[in-house]
Image (tube, rainbow, N blue to C red; front, top):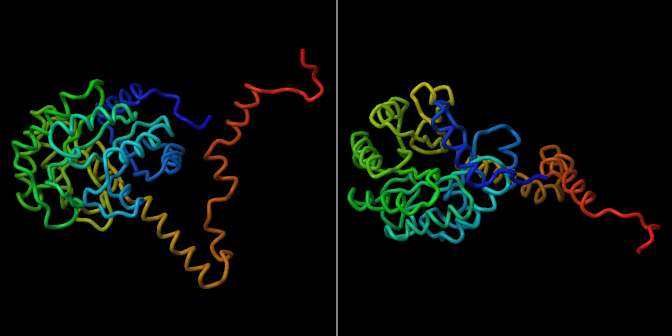
Length: 302
């Protein structure tokens, strides 16, 4: 059937092995389980659940309005849709260090393979916007320590995101990266770096894996997987790409209906019924059901 055949613990081991492999892991963003299934079908290495995309899908701006319950719920159904490991954006941990600790255990229970916690003050902002307020280093370190101490599965990946590039430059990013690594973070997410050379500097400064955010319309150049591999990046995410593509198609379709009185002009751009059924695994469900419960109408009941 079209559902995960791996346990959450097995997916976390897959992620750990991938981070240790020296290969770049590609993790497009999925704003729904169906998108996650398409990601898996095309051979990617993992699934990313973006806080910004999740907020947008709920009709909210990305300013920390979503709740732990909403994030864990969406992350859980997305994680269960494929055999791939998933990483979820846990914003600031939804509060103080104790809240971050509870967040980690809730996300473990949801079945994801890891999460990242950022060092912005609440209310947080998108990492590629100006005017962000950053927490003092000591407070941020306490949050990471709390998250690391709270996890029950040692393979659950705690990623520390830092947003200090705009206010403290790459030197500030490196200082925080080292402090977060010392606090037990398994991976670093240096947000809004502005060149491949900056990624290379951060990569050379820390021993833990690093993650690159290739979001569109932001401060980071859209580097290719080859360019990211060349500077030693371990994970690349495309957090809002699929949502932006989908919403572009949605608005085109609505415009066509409003303009033409029907959708005929955009039917050739749609996923067909057959393609959707193949992705969902209709045949697998039918076979499963037939194997469990099958009878002939003329059979006698004892």
